[in-house]
Image 1 (tube, rainbow, N blue to C red):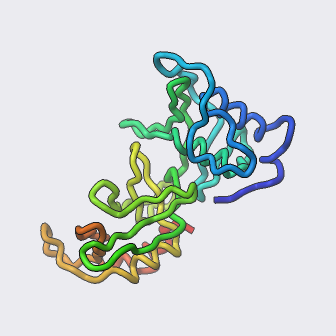
Image 2: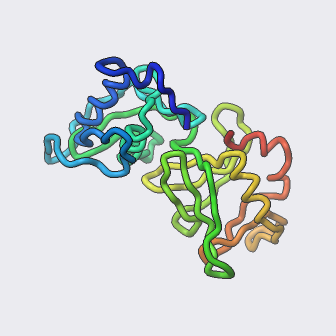
Length: 223
């Protein structure tokens, strides 16, 4: 996650102040200075349903940086606050949605980037836990699967983790290599083809063919 402490953190006005204002308008409150922004604050008006406010000038770039009014949001706590109410619908549109308002934003690739991973436990109880650029921890299990698909900009295959609310996180390059180091070659039970696989949360997760390790596909992994 890029943190821009210049234009994105302007005091008294500009996109950063507008981002804080938007958080308040959505009923999220304002994250305290230095706060983690992981939970919505109390306060703000409440309606029976969200008010549809249409498209807003906010986007998540392919490297995971959040922009508002064309400028990076410099406050990481504010980005984390927005991330708690981000959803993707069945049509592939991305929304900031609270009981107060519902606004559509643009996402160039994945909503998040996986920046770290660790292995917890041993044997069949072991599980792989990923950490995203908004510090959410997501286990690799039957509810959070890895999917190989082309990146929208290049068409190169890349690994994405499903994280809930219709969202995905792109595995960063360093994490991708860590995962491949853990993998071994198995025969897929459905196709019989040789594929890379890892064990996590008591189940086998199939990553794709051994060519998953070649430079063409590796180039599709996140930075």
